[in-house]
Amino acid sequence: MTNLYLDVDGVFLLETGDTGLNGRTEYKIARHTSSVLKWCLQNFECYWLTARSCQGSIEEVARAFRFATGSTSEIRNLAKSIAVAPWARAKIKGMDLRKPFVFVDDNIDAIPYQYLLDNGLADKWIHALLTHDEDYLLEVVTAPKLVDKAVRPEALVIPRKKGLPL
Image (tube, rainbow, N blue to C red; front, side):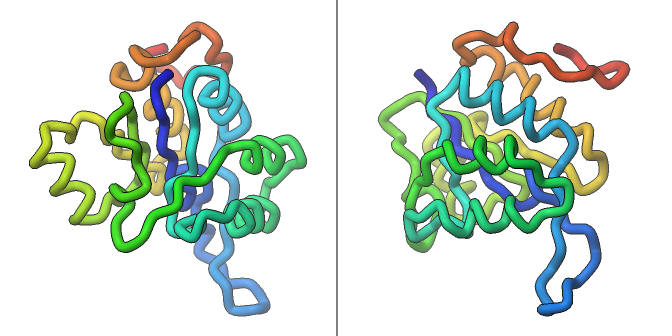
């Protein structure tokens, strides 16, 4: 089974532009998160690869989902069911590069991107651009490089946005 490395911020959690009473940036759950996480878990060996889990703990990921606007118990449980990929200094260190993988991130850092380029693996990165269009999450999960590696691609049951392939 293909490993799927998922970032949190900018992919499943989007900044609202608001600041909470405690001075922290407020986030909301991206549209289609529940359906997309279910599909990913059915089709891939999933890992959170995010600054929130770089130390190897799910706690900060779970906390982020818990406090995000639009969070539900279903989404929180799905988020907690995904393992974390610990890493230090560069996300590439959290990936098992011996196995087939795909990496979904909104803003890849220079070190992992350069490594992917240098090793002919740049096509393993899917650029999530949800800041402009929340429905872009549908395009992310219907990208051929992800669908082609899915165990059961037909299991993706989410509302289609007009013009998006599925």
